[in-house]
Image (tube, rainbow, N blue to C red; front, side, top):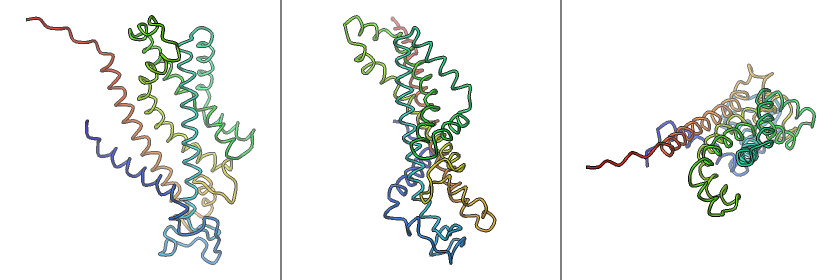
Length: 281
């Protein structure tokens, strides 16, 4: 097995550290994220408050750890839901073809023609701010890349000889999909999912920044950015901390996703290459 590049190992370690810290926020956070201390509001980083405090005297580090639960959870759930939905639509279109393939392809093209953020913003504004609306908006706008990728790969795999052999042997369609098609889609779809996770994280931060995410007193990284903006000059750490975390996590996940996508492409090229002709003495 090839050794992973240094930048991928660093990205994986940083991502694991952030996820572990957020998961253990209830035990390692130095203060309650909602605890206010107006006497020390907008303080600079000190030994008591490592990242300073916000405009209500709340510990920035504690709110950063607590807010990561929402941001990472929404991004992860949106990634899983869009991956499952898009893969199911893409594989079904490739297998059934006909009017179903045409309908799903046209729907995909329409959604791809519209900016995802604009559509998500419209849906969240129409349904109301909150956790379910945000998740639904990201799912509705985010399944299209998975569907296109799954459809193209399923078309390619379905044309291979072992699929025809399984059909001739009388294998049911669901068995062919589960046993022969989905395993060939797993690698590319995993790479796509990691790339989409970083995009979803940025989208969650942007929508929360606009006030369409969690509502006070809960916090997430996007709402922390919005609350800290008026005080950025006086207390820059309150806006730098959530911004740097969003950027770092999105960058690490994108680097890992690009590496997985390259590995999957290499495997697909090797699998589709014709076997060398046997040489005769």
